[in-house]
Image (cartoon, rainbow, N blue to C red; front, top):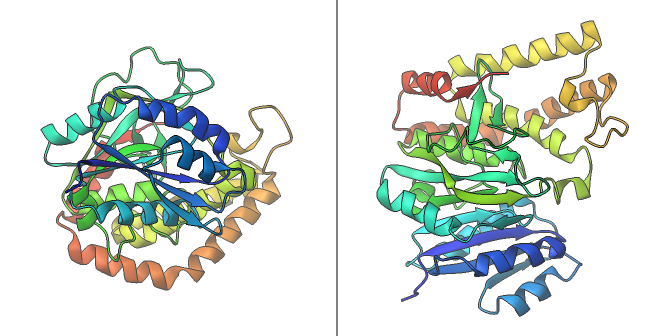
Length: 346
């Protein structure tokens, strides 16, 4: 029998420079019953060779192409769960570094709270360690948008109390084996139709529908660079997939009464862009003050692309919706209460 109780899954694409920062911190964890499962998405920068040399007993999966975040993590989780000793699965972005007590803290949460299916870390910016990247993910009140609580705020202790978020970000999360298995069909833990983005919201919501709680633990410290892989593919890539996948998630996982929030949000958004020539503030400029990713016309183009892509994937979402709603253990009333409770305000 294996001595490893936890498997840490890292999906990677040309991230050797990040791995050289991350893996030493993972090796220094006070919690030692851990196996590394490394999934490489066709890198050509020496990532795989570095992992082999630094962590010789890691389980490595080498894809010949970039299979995307969801597919790569699923491959790693499936491989990890082949070991019956594995009770917990951690997902960890390659552009992070972790505190020595990170894993021990997350494991302690799940071992003390048997109703919790997944736990989120306190994630700070690697560029400025006094600034938040995320303190759990929460709904923006009255919408279907989920945001990282605390993003870009200075850490002054305002999120140092453990609590229950709407969803758990996969950048640095720990999942209970049973919760993953109960909320997943056919080994598709993260929805592969999503590719990247919103997939962690989706799996969190599926766990909720299956009766599991979620948790945020501020003592589990992680530092995150952010967008290191996705923006190396395209500057538009994160935004395109986020808009599309939010639509897919709603179709797949929300009752009709909550789907109306999506309709309201997008109808109002289109009206605002056309009538007022308005582009959302987050899309106007880059952090460096360079030319914006999206003009008004590009914002409309993005919306049309997202709707077209959603229509193409509609049969798959309906099929998954039927499976999910046949498994749910909470009522529509419970779902509405979750949407009222775990919120932040613009």
